[in-house]
Amino acid sequence: GIYFRSDFSSSTPDSSQLLIAGNDIYQNSNRAIHCYSRNYGRLSAEIRANRIYQNGGDGIYCDRGGMLAAGQQMAPVIVLNEIYQNGGHGVYC
Image (cartoon, rainbow, N blue to C red; front, side, top):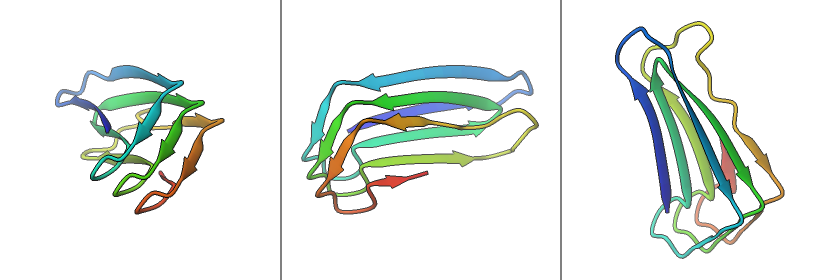
């Protein structure tokens, strides 16, 4: 699968951008796509026009952990994906 992590340990905000588009993501033992933002990291993820199927866990999983600061967020854009036959949720954010 695909794992992307934005993690900053200082109070200086970090901004990471991610585009996952036009892929077949299938038959992974766990999640197909896992986006994770922690502490002062800000993650802008766009997940577009992928086929995500037959994975052991969730199709798309987005999570935020650590310290939350004003203006730090994760707001993924998830559009035009085919998500089916996964072992967990289709999309969990």
